[in-house]
Every structure is written in structure tokens, then in C-alpha cells.
Image 1 (cartoon, rainbow, N blue to C red):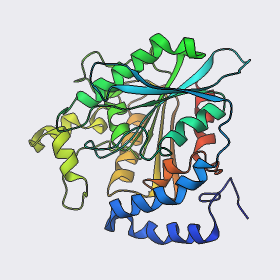
Image 2: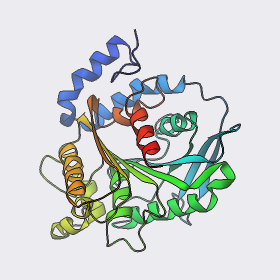
Image 3: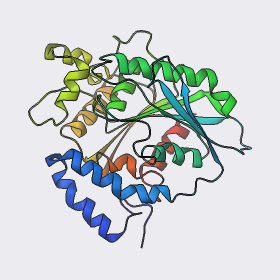
Image 4: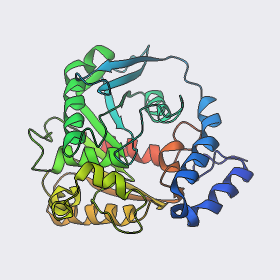
Length: 309
């Protein structure tokens, strides 16, 4: 029997056993394991009841072909202007899209729209054509487009939250915390940030399976990685912050998330600063489970959003 409040609770016993089995071996083949997780969750999120949610697709927030976004929201809503959740996908800086297969990562936006938010799913430019800090610049541009236009979709421009997964989380963190990002976002513009399984430190360590992507985005000069890593600037913004990691992460990402959280707390921030570690989940399932029937990370994020009022 499914148990929505438990990790993997929407999966069959067979699929739970499958994902539990690859968890401890996640780093052995992250690409194959990622694809397996996507195949496991796709049928479930495709069955979700998304009736009543309208989607405006591929709206440009910049001039480049990948600078587009989708807006999701209920067509009928009587609760006034709604909180806005803006999601940035992952992909090791060099790949990925806002809709990997027509289901993932649309599922994140659909889930938040079902909870009464206006959700925005963003695509951004990739390395090596767009290197540091280009990804963060796209977050800035998309967030400001949202603030300027979201009211016509029923969203509250004063309640815009950013959520980034993996490389997308790195870009969100840089857009808010990195002093080297020109005209970075301020807490006056952004109501909160959620960094989910984010790469918060640049590294090309031998056991980093995405070292090529890190090098393509952050550059060949590893001597610059410290100053270009979001973790080096965790005290540079007082924006409300939620950091989440999975039990089974791409190598080091859980440690980097914990480091960012500790540094943010030590900086003396006054804004809400939260951390969650999701048992059983892996680097992909931590977002793939949204809108599958499992209610674990999502309610925590909604609680964080309410806390910032």
C-alpha cells in the first residue's frame, strides 16, 4: 500500500526495492541510475490529475533560444495574488532542459501549481558556450522577467521564490550570494531560495563524475574555483534559505550543502535558514518524486514559504 508521507511511498514495492538497491551504488554510474529513476517516476507523474492548470509555454525572458520559460497556474483561483515558485533544472552545466521527457521536470511546476502557487519552469544557456557567471545571469534575467510579468498570471511579484536543482541550484545560489555576479538579486526582490541537491562548490576531484561540466562552466583555472564557488559567499545575502540534499548524492554534493548551510548560519543571518536531508532519496528522485503522489519534500518547502510571510 502506498504511503504518501514516506520516501518512495508512491512507488510499488518492486520499484522501491529497485531504487533502494541503486542508492548505495549511485555514484558508480550516475547517468544510468538517473535514467532509471526518470523511467520509474515518469508513468506516475503522467497520471497526476493536472486538470484546471493552464500552461503558457516558451515565453522569452531574453534573446537567446534557451532563454525561455513556462508558466503554470490554476485557471480559477479566488485566493488573491499567489506565491510564485521559479524552478531551474539541473544538467551538470552542459545539458538538460525544463522538460526532459515531457514529464520531468514539468512535474515540479505542476505540483506547486496544484498547491495554489503560480509556477515557472525555466530553461537557461549552457556551457561551454555560456560560461561562469552566465548561468547566474540567466537566473537574474528570468527572476526579473517574472517580477515584471507574473501579475497577469495571478502571481504576486513580491512573493517570488527561486528553486534550483543540481547545476540549477548553483546558478540560483550565485545569482543571490556571489558578489562577482553583476547586479545580483537582492532580498528585496526574492522572497526565498531553495537549493536542492545543488553544486555549491566547484571541483574537478577524481571522483567527480561531472568534472568535465564543472570545467566547462567554471573554467580551466582551478585557482579561481574558490572565489567562484557559491559556498565561499554563503553570508553575502540575507534571503530566506532552504537547502535540501538526498541521502545518495552525486559525490560531495551532500557535503557541500551542509557546508553552505553551516556557513550561512555562522554569518549571522537573520532570515530563516533551513536544512533537510531526505532519507532513501537520490540526486534525481529528490525532484522526480514531485507530483507522483509522494508528499515529503514538497510540504517542507511550502512550510518554508509560509514561514517567510
